[in-house]
Image (cartoon, rainbow, N blue to C red; front, side, top):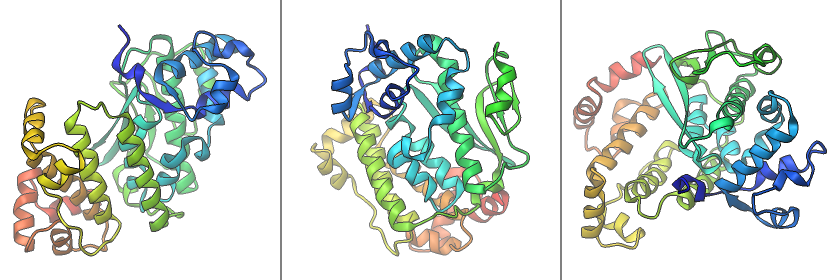
Length: 342
C-alpha cells in the first residue's frame, strides 16, 4: 500500500528543472504517469510522481554526486513563496523557521525540525517516509539549500557552524568540499545544519514587511493544501499560526482567535472540533498555548519589544500575567529567556 505522503500534491517545479537539462532524455518521466506535455501544463504533481522523476534522474545521471549537482543548481526562485519568505524575513532565525514550518509544501517526504540549545540552533532533517536510494541525495539537496540561504543572508560563511550528517562517509565524500562551504562530519547522531544561536537574531538585509507577510500568506495557503483533511490539529495549528504571524509583523493589536471562530473557518461546529482534537490527544487550549509560546520566543529575540509589549501583543492584561504564563510554558522567566538567547 502506498505511503500516505506519496499521494500529497507538490509543485512541479523541481521536475521541470530536471526536464530542462540536456542530460536527461524522455526516460526521465518513465513510470511516473507524466509526459512532457502534461508536466508542462501542470503546476502540481504527486509526491510519488516527483520521487519517481528523481529516481529516474539518479539512474540516468550515472554519477553519485547527482544530489549535490541538483542542490547547487537550485536558487531562491526554485522554492516559490517559501524561498521569498525566508529571504525577506525579519531575522535569520525567522527565515529558518520558514523552512521548518513550510518545507513540507515543497518536500513533504522530509520533516524539518528546529532545536535550540543554550549555545546553538540546529535545523534537523529527517525522512517522513521510506526513501531508500533517494534518502542520501535528497538530504544533500536540502542541506545545500539551507547552507546557501544562511551564507546568502550573512554574506559570508558563519564561524562555529557546520553540517552534521547521520550517515557513513559515502563513496563520493571527497567531492563534498567542492559543494559545501561549511565543515561537515559523518556518522553524526542526526543530520542537521548547526549555527551559533546568536546568529538567529541577525537581521536579514532584504527584509520587507509587506513582502514577507504576502509570502507567508501564500505559504500558509500551500500548507493547507497538503494537510490531511482528517488532521484537525494541523489545520488548527495552521489557522492559529496565520493569526499570530500578524503579531510578529508588528501589528499593534491582533485579537486572540476563539474556538468558535476557528471551528467556523474549518466548517465544523465547536463541539465537533473539540471531539476531533480530543481524538488526536490534544485540545484547542493546548494548541493555542503552543502558538503563544512560539510567538513569544520569537518576539523576545527582538530587542525592540519589551516584555510588557509582548504580553500586550499576546493578549495579556499585564506583564506579570504574561510572565507567569511564560514560566509555566518554559520553566524560566521571559527576561531569563531573553538573556540566554543573546
